[in-house]
Length: 81
Image (cartoon, rainbow, N blue to C red):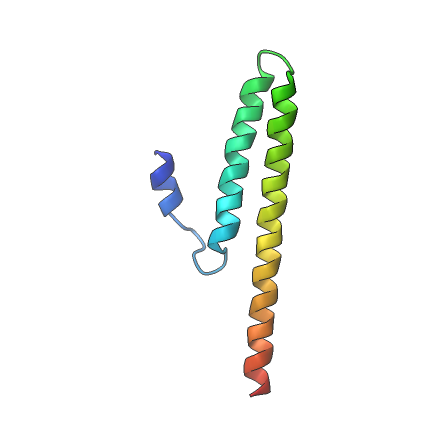
């Protein structure tokens, strides 16, 4: 299965926002690069890719939290009407 096919399959389309999925995919790519760099030795590239992956995962979590806050705000607004 290629990356495009995998990206179009959304197991939780209404739960996980697109932004979070995009960050998760970028993190996945960076983790793969870091592991490829790790196999021959532990070069500086490994650390750079690992940090980039960590940042993308944190951005994905932030996106999930922001989306959850938006849903709570919408629910509060609807309840107040």
